[in-house]
Image (tube, rainbow, N blue to C red):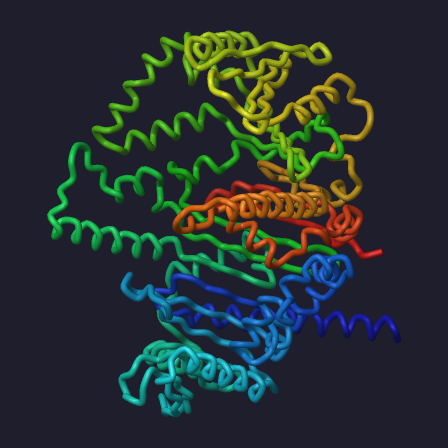
Length: 608
């Protein structure tokens, strides 16, 4: 009997999940023409329940985290809750709790002039049993808008037999809408233009909308790539954005011509630059996320045509079999390995430059003289000596960081000759390489004629199998070299949490990376506290100086001010607390024939 009850429960759960997904699919078929962007939530109650179980939510409820984040609640509410209360009458969680099912919102831009403070948009949400609560949020939003503009008026209008509540800028029938809502069956429509409201009312009544275009095809493909599209989706139509961008460029060129501002010398049109970079190949961009009891997943998906030749071609790996280098030590902050052929990258860059027309010749003509000075061919000798395996390792504590890039060597002799030529070229005017020994490895550190700090120090080490380039201090480089010398003990890949994450993702990736998420959170907190301390000291010193006027705050000062208003640097959570709630984050890159996908995955860590 218990087994039968369990099977029935599982069946009902699968039906409910499928129903939510089917509702979104139905709404996608009603997508208006000229849709530029989409935001969708598959099932709001399920999303909130998964959030409650996540390590992120549990971290925010920890006493140490609460003390750290006390400044952001100095007025009683967190910034996001304050915004929701001011706009919808209740906090973010309580507002979303009133939505019983799926949500979708379409940004609909037909002309570049429609990009303003309130661009055309239309949204749909399920309201089953919650119409009163959701309408209360809409009325609260109208009242919040009236505080900004007291001329806003609320009225009721019949559109295609449906009663529509409209908040407009005045009582005039043709006054611009601020927002409006209506109910058709168990669905509430919200729109800010008469045309979109009328369209969606008819589409819901007839279960048929505008002819399906590229955006609908994009969403179908994104769902296939991400195995269902996730609990949440943010999508942008690259084709439509490019069209709008070209409208903006045309308008700018027309204004420039009307103002009599003639171009001098080589006038490279912005469209030529866009074509060179392959902007037209960015067909769609999407972020999807899915939270479950056992894992949190996010996917970045970029759709493109087959065999792209622009910038997107540089993001595609050259193979889907990756070997995890055992010499990357355990305990570091981040590590990754990917497949990338630099000869192919070089060819792609020259191909893009070739699209510049006459300017291309000016660039390519500089390459032979440069190679003559270097004493080697860039494509054949330098890039041709490297295999297509690239590693990256980074470590630090928030105040001092260093990283290493590694390239597997295919032809050691050819690479050695290229490096010697590079050293001679640098020594002729830029500085010199200083040699040192570490565990039998020869490290060449660049000493420039200009004073440099440790954070910008550059060095390389040719181990015979890998070319390692170090940026910043050499602590990370020496950790890698030490493990190459003595590979005993675990590597970063042997961590049980990392092993579990690797077992959960498809293996045909072109690149994979792992980050100690707990340490990363700790490092960000440390960096913010350090920045706040430094800028605070500068502010005190500046206050003692006399002089007219005030300087606008620097970028660092702005970041420090924001950090200080949200976090108490003196109450930063302990390392153990960060580690308790955040485990390792895995990222895996996939090169599909028509898409680039970056898959992020972490498994929650229960609070002790």
